[in-house]
Length: 141
Image 1 (cartoon, rainbow, N blue to C red):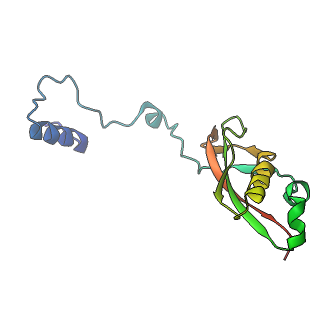
Image 2 (cartoon, rainbow, N blue to C red; image 1 turned 120 degrees about the vertical axis):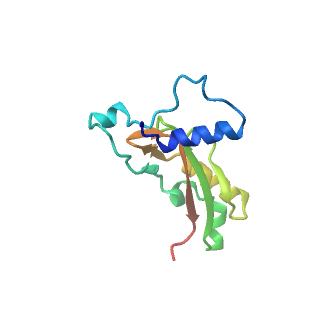
Image 3 (cartoon, rainbow, N blue to C red; image 1 turned 135 degrees about the vertical axis):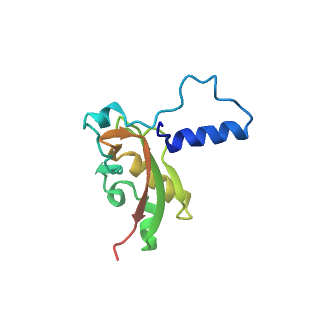
């Protein structure tokens, strides 16, 4: 008697429930291991690696609007940047959480746009991914 795998039984039950006959099928899906597995060349999945920031400008010194320095307050904007497989920002940087001041938000997006990034990877291959970056302007403290 031939051993029947779970996959074959599942296909048979599905076919019966749909009123389909399997007698005309030449082959059900195989439950055999792949050729790579049989040859001992199975690779295990590596954990995904996130986008890496390679270089960011000094947002406070280079992008902080001078008219806000008199407030002596901190302003924060959360931005979202998407990096393509070619390590380049592939769409405009977006504001996720506004500081409440459009000029500050604009400065934050310009600062993040000026950064350099390395694409995220899955199993060592680059993939498109997005990352949130918080930009804070104002005095330290």
